[in-house]
Length: 425
Image 1 (cartoon, rainbow, N blue to C red):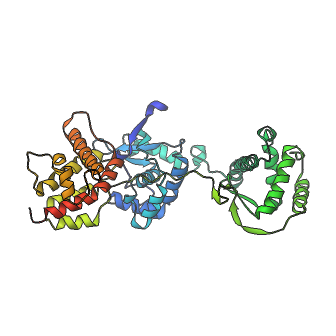
Image 2: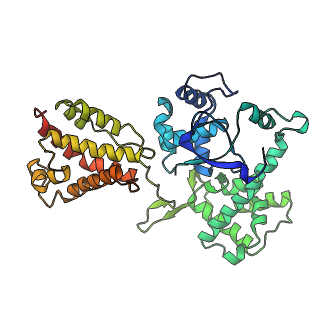
């Protein structure tokens, strides 16, 4: 196989299946069994959270093997693929982890394609899998980092910690952009000492999210002094460990300190206009709906018509994923309204948009002509979207989020129509 970008391909996630015969586990009968095992034994939820936060590792490709017409299974990347599939559609997750995957996917932009290398069969990919997974193998395979090497690598995050401290100092007006230039090494040197960090009560998650256990009063006094000494270059990288310890003692001995400690708090907190504290973080992006939300009231009303076709149509509409089956759902929505209005007395000479006029909406106790305008707009959108998707050779409706919202908007209309249809079938 040739080496280089030409050997890679972008393959749609929906075309790729988990390897049910992966060497990591015993063979499984289907995808659900494979997902259940991987989630139970391979910490897929943790992989999923890491992918949401950092994205896919650009140093690792997927190795795929063709299986049937236009589909593949993953010979390398099974765990990553499983995480992506469950983030794209949390309903595929085992019941005990479903809520965790729903939460993890709150700010998830679904990955729709995988950068992959396609191999003809398992024999062709085996050599390369051995290079990755079979150990050092006399230098032919990957070598794991030793503990000291791991520590050296993770030590690079010290810069993040120092950067966060300088950012906080600048945001508080304690050091200017000019004064902080070239000072990151000094901050890193001082805060690399545990006694110095303890003096300020400082800690940081992931090297960036600063917290302190000191009271507001004590931290303000000590941190202002530290930033002033950094800004004026009173502190330098030439200091030894004893000098840093001595400086930490001087901070602790400053006049006016209370010596009080409190529950650890986030130093990104700021005073808002009303004097209340709130965290300065971005608002959470709403989670994209994955499926049309079923209505218990509507399902009960449909049973009373009765109409197996309508029940089955509604079941299918609420079962298919919005992101991958938008076109089918659009046509299904059109068919659902077409059938529901037909059992309410609409004839073939009238389309359902015309049938659901302002007068009809009023008869169904849905409000006045003005009050039902938005509802009639939704009905027209379903009519136009369904017709163009069904009949036009290129035009189609691709907005799953809009379809989700339209069904929420029309729930009361559907229920009233179902009530009106009782005994008419």
